[in-house]
Every structure is written in C-alpha cells, then in structure tokens.
Amino acid sequence: MRRWLPLWLIASAVLALALMGQIVVQHVHQAQQADTTSSLHFAWAFHPKSFREARDSTDLLVLANVASVQRGADRRPGERAAKW
Image (cartoon, rainbow, N blue to C red; front, side, top):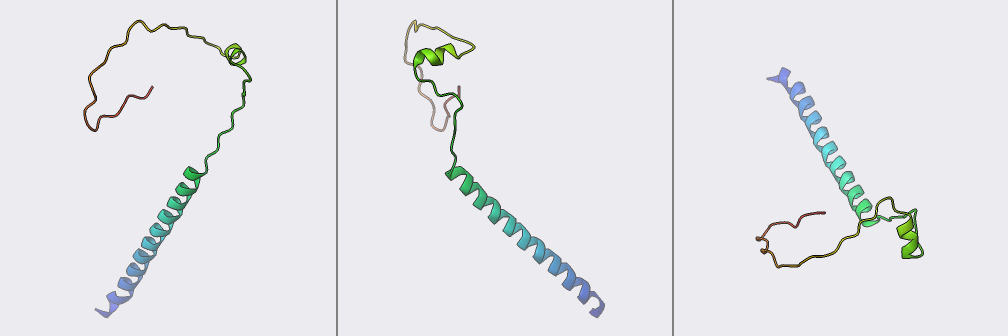
C-alpha cells in the first residue's frame, strides 16, 4: 500500500492543478467576453451628407412598389422571426 501512495499523491496533484487551470481559463474568458460585448464601437468609412450622395455611391439600386398588404398568420409561441 505504501508504494502506491506517492503515485496517488502525484495523480491527485495533477488533477487538482488541471481543475484550477480550467477554472482560471473559464474566468478569464468570461471576463474578456463581458469587456468586448459592452464596449463595441463601430466606425463607418463612408459618411454621406445627403441621400443623393448615398445613392450615387451604390453599386446596385433596387426600386420596388408595394402591390398589396395582407395580414398573415401569427407566429407560434417560441417561433423566431426570419432574419433578412
């Protein structure tokens, strides 16, 4: 029994260090996620001064007319709206 004691102690120490490492990594990752999601800032390269300037800078222009509008079926509870 005594010759297995050092092996058991080493294995326990390795597992304890691995567990502490996982906890530290998870804590740091969560802290980074909280920092990045709360401080996002967007900068746009194009700042049009008028609608004409925005229209002139586009590659594609789509003109459409609404032909009719009708009420559709309501979504079921828990159903998510489609992302366009």
